[in-house]
Image (cartoon, rainbow, N blue to C red; front, side, top):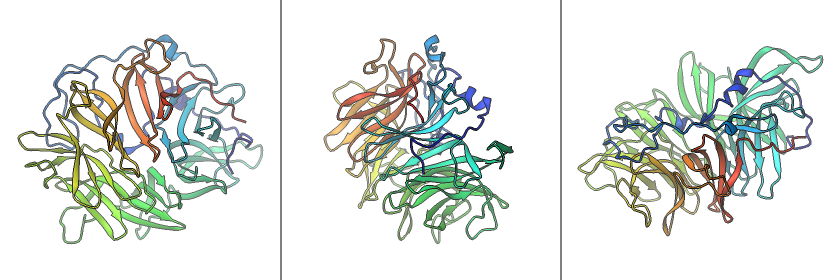
Length: 469
């Protein structure tokens, strides 16, 4: 059982891992495959280039602005202070979970990484490097991806290290990786590197993008070897199911097949999951329903934009709520080719916002969309680009599109030089609360929350760690 009272089991952290967390500026721990393959966006507010037919964003034609040089204060991380963060996630209770990296302190001399969970009342829970894993013979050596459900349970992809019987020291340099849940009942292993793939002669060789719902259903992306491939898996109880894999036809009677590229949403309470996948001939947005796999948008097929077909999906993961509604980003062709944010409910796909749409009462217009997340009220938080590649964070509600934070906006309660520069991977709950990772113009990074109290920092690089007993 994991809680604040657990005794710490020490385990050495590789110096390279810790050093990477302090390498100045905006070096982030990517926790989602949905961010892989996307080119960094410059902050220059000049005109955006025209859309191409590629799945990736086009190369910018404008001159890239040099990033702001980190201040010396940004780099002077002391033992016992936060150094870097993974993308945060928030559940319907308002609990925020994230991966934090830090320099060891005298109180925690051999630990440089932990999963932190902060509750709305300010309390903390932890899952740390060195904590016992699913048995008494292994401890956690590192974490990569995480999820939290509405019960407050954690799901992580992590590596574990075996312990020697004498002294509790590492038996050797070997480690294994797997998918683990941490609940009030304890730590449970659900999939292990080298384990057999269901109904295939292959064995697992890697994991990413784990998620699970309050019923305990788990979804993840896994690669496998001999023969090689990649697929989407769901675990319910002790039963593991392969939903889609590379080389599989996208539907009976179709010639197109899935590739090895999957960019999934989290699994919803109905056991449904949406994802973007490259397929032979382009790409598409798919949903695993109770009745099977549904294709809701396919490259080359008509889009909701009049006279335009889908041109691509930018390798951006969609989002699904518990009603089965899916929010996703797509490119479209035609005389006014551009990019748009779409939503698919019970009926046909609908357009939410597109290139050229004005942003509120400002003079800005949208040029691109990224990282959508939809809640059960149908609200959608997303990162929007405007004036070229300048970014902001926005929330679509029944009243319209609301601005949460913009480039060069002053950080609430921060110093004069603390202004927002870039935004990454927002998370949204059913109360309309939003958490996100942001880079500041002074080179610092932090996690931020916007709730009924307004927009404010949750934790920033250099903040003291909570006490971990």
